[in-house]
Image (cartoon, rainbow, N blue to C red; front, top):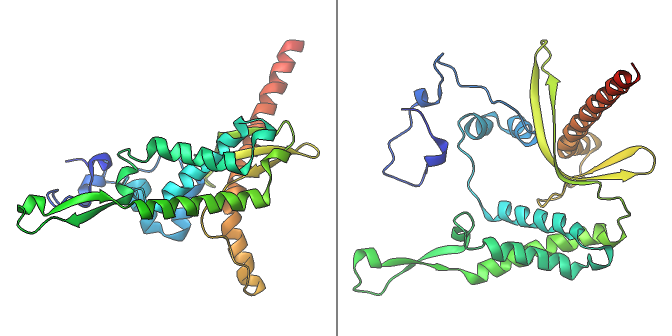
Length: 261
C-alpha cells in the first residue's frame, strides 16, 4: 500500500505500522523531490534524517506555537504596507496581527494549539471523564510574545519611513534551475518576504525571522560559522533572484533584437 502523508497521524494508535517499501517507487528507490527550497537545503545541512522524513517521506512537523507565531507575525508585516505611510503605526501593526489570529484561532489547523484535556466529575462515564477546554491564559501569553516580536521589528525599522517605491515586492516566489555540478540542473525555489530598491541599481532582500537571534559572543571562527549559517538562506534567495533577473534581461534583449530585425 502506498504511503499517503496527508492521512498519516502519528498520534492515531489504530494506524498500521509503516513499512519502508511504502516510500519506494517502482524502481525500488525513494523518489527525489521535484524541487528544493532554501529551508529544505538548510534542514538537510542541519539533519539529513529530518530532511528525509519531511521532504522525501512527506511527514511534516505539525503546527506548534512557534510556527504559528511566525506565520501571523509575517502576515501582519506584509499587510502593514497595504496601509498608507502615516497609518503604519505600531498599534495598527498589532491590530493586523490580532485580526489575522482572530480569523484563524478556532480553525482545524490552529484551534488545537491551546486546547487542553481536563478531567470530568467523579462518577462520570469513562468517555465523559475527560474533555477539552481552551487555555485562554496560555493563548494570551502567546499573543503577547508575538506582539513583542513586532515591537522588536518596529525598533529596527519604522515602516512609516520606508520610501516609495518600497517595498518593491512582497511575498514573491523566486526560482531558478541551478547547476548540480554534473551537467544536470535542479529547480530551487522559495518565497522572499520582501524586496526593496536601494541606492543605485541594487536590491535588498528582507527576510523576517521570529526565532532566536544569533549570538556572536564566541571566537572569530565560531562567530563566522554562526553568521554563515544564519545568512545562508538569504544567499540562496539572492542567487535565485539574480538568475531570474539575468533570464529576464536575456529575454528582453532577444525581443529587442527581433523588433529591430
